[in-house]
Length: 389
Image (cartoon, rainbow, N blue to C red; front, side, top):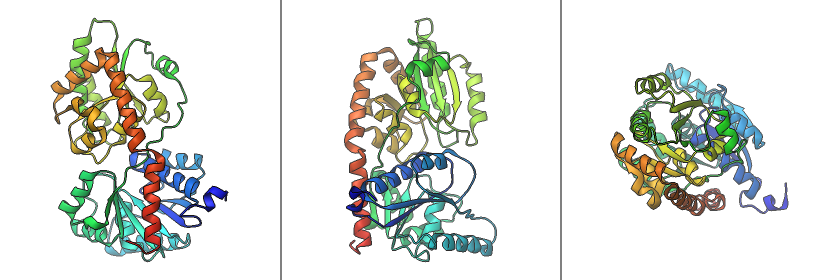
């Protein structure tokens, strides 16, 4: 262990991150980023436990950062006896890791850790709230009981704290708002290479939307707004093309059908799950993000960090993420006409999108720097391990 690590407040402490599985979303990327920071800067011994072993990119990302990964299939289906047996298997496996702290992310890991963290031998545990959508997997009583059982609760947004307190009876004194770091890897391909690969010209107007294709995201409004933009820009020279990046999470067929209905085949690309997100954003002129409910979406924060203007849905999570620079470019939920007007303004004005993009990047640099975010987390964990509230 290096000298810098040994001097860290968490030196020698075993911090186990518990994730739902290997599928890489914003919650998983945030957890892996934090695990890496706690190890590199503060000397923690970190590991990841996944409750599902279906293949995905999260495990690959952890491997690239040399973070140990263990799959412990833990299901919440069937009889009470079967659930109890599954939880017992989780406890046995985690106890062997001798954890000091468990940090769970998303609903299933949060509830599993809420039920078992004391039995694993951990001194403390952190519930990380990653959305404001609730859950149908667990009953309200189980969700509330496990939320109250966790000594520390972390959420990424202030409206998320209010949601936990108002709707689920969370203890405001134990709920902390800690931003996650936004750290973008170097692009694998540059702007020119990305555009050439997709058959796009340098002067085409390119927007990207980073969002897995499931019903929680509002791809419909984005597509209907894009149809209006295409009609206004037709014949003016640059071709508008929307790049949709995200895996199929149950709604891809419906989104593709709507794109065909709107005759967008020459003005849209479905890219699936993209590994080189940094390169994709470098190839884009601005970003769009439409959703029904969000806590604090990385589909907004990452384009902001890349210096892109973002046009999005005016819901609490998106508004909090975009901050003051992005407020004029928010459209009401389902408001494709207003959304299209903002897209058109940004598409036709390179100076405007450059100015907004620079302001967005500054917001991320000051609010989401790794030293700031991980430093707050380290203070919270070290206080908990020392027995301080």
